[in-house]
Image (cartoon, rainbow over all chains, first blue to last red; front, top):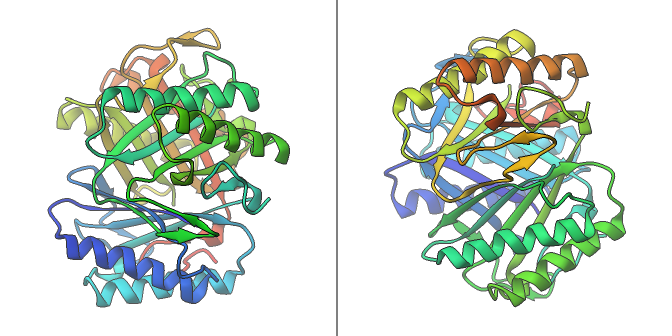
Length: 125
Length: 125
Length: 125
């Protein structure tokens, strides 16, 4: 059920966005018990709108960060979260080739009853 | 006090966006105890940036989903949430005519003290 | 660690966006124990997409609101939140000159384990 917001630099190809979309989703399927057909994503490209520290916590950031904010139901363990972060980073580093240092991920957890996937129903309430 | 983010397909008319804005707000006034004059919305249009599963939980999705993410204070009952989802879907299905299956809604609840509606004050703290 | 989303009116200068970015960050450093080098921001400009009530809670809003949504770890006190709101408003009112009434702020708090600042690691877990 996650709603995924991916913010990336402007001027990228469709294949780039497609790889971001697929990489994040595949990692959620593998580590977060997200069904394969559970895809709800908003991708946006930004020019100067993305701002990132040159260095934080010992990690150096280039000029093209990828911010991934995932709103999802609560209940995953810390181990699952670690696996998700690692899974997203390794996939996006492989394809489309985003440096793993430039992948910033944040989870926003909500109650299960807070979702409607269409038809005005609260499918998980 | 909700902050409403509405993400819809590109190439729509002003009337389309206006109807989305009004339909969501009217449903919140009716079901969520939101004051009539409490409007804080960010609408964005997206081309290929919106990605949705063709089918999930028995609901088929077309190519133009409308994602509605509402950040609001905590405290509404499950019944209120169900009423909100139904109220938004029925309104947007009527006007501007979004198929109810294509309306995806998610609530993010926060503490009441987490809001400033201007002037640097925490009006609800 | 906050992820800051700033939504402002279209047609502004780079200096305007820069001052928004800096003012919000400086306020977080001063009031929220955010390290100086902890900058993760997404700025977007919007034309008609920003919708705000003309008046709410006794505050009148002009046509160009600035919405600031800050996702951060939980744990700040109410006093810190009040100081943050005041600090952002006073800074942005001074530079780039946004009326304090038009600055709308909302905090979304998450667990500390919900963040990855690069390299696929959960730095705070």
